Image (cartoon, rainbow, N blue to C red; front, top):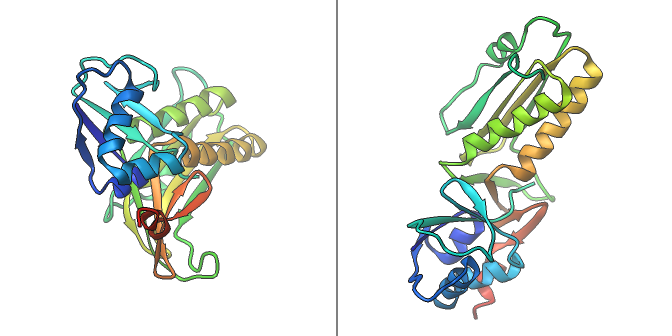
Amino acid sequence: MRLLLYGILAAAAGAREIDVDASGCDSVRCLLERAARVNKGLARALEILEWDIVVVADGRRIGLEDRIGNWGKIAVLPPASGGSPGGSRVFGGILKPGDEVDIDEIIEKLTGPGVGAIAVFVGVVRSPNEGEEVEFLEYDYDPELTGKWLTRIAEEEVEKRGLYGAAAYHYVGRRYPRERTMIVAVAGDRRDRVFKALAELVDRIKHEAPIWKSEKRGGKLYYYVGSKAIDFDALKSRDS
C-alpha cells in the first residue's frame, strides 16, 4: 500500500510517497508502525507529533485503529498550521504562485440583497519573525482535499451565522516576505456579525484546512505543527 505524506512527515521521511507491505496488518496503526520501522525519519516525526495525525482514504477520514480496506493508497497528514440555505454564495480554493485574485471582484460577488457589511482579511508573509529575517514560507497541501475543505469550512460558517456568503482562498507553494498568503471575505447584514464570522473563519482555515507551513529564517528551517515551530535541523540531529 502507498502512503502519501505531507508537511513535516514528508520532509522527515525524505519522500512524498512510501510503499508499505500491508500483509498481516489488521489496522492502520500497524501499517504506519511498519513504515516507521523502515524509515527512521518518519519514526522521529511521528514521535515528535505524538501520533497526532490525520489519515484519509477514499476522501474520508479514518482512524488509526480502523481495519485496512482495499484502498491502494492513504494520505497521512500532520495537524494543520495554525447564511441562508440555498441562497448563500461560497467560493474560493487554492492559489499557486503567479495566481492573482481581484479583491474588488470578490466584493462584487458578495454584494447582494440584505448585505450591509463585507469584511476582508488578507494574510501576508511577515518579516522579521521572532527577531529574524524571513527568507520564505512554504505551504504544503493535499491537492485532492484542500480546496474542498476550504469550501466546506466557509459553507459551515455561512450556515451557522446566517451570512449572505463567503470567500476563502489560500496560497500554496513558496511565498516571500510581503506576498499574500490567504484572502478571506464574508458578507452579511451587520458589521458585528460579519467581524465575528471573519475572525472565526480565518482561525478555522489556519487550524483545520490540510495546509502545512514551513518557514526559512535565520538560516534555519522550521515546520509549524499547530502553533508550535519545530526546528527541522534539530529533528534530524536526533538520529546522530
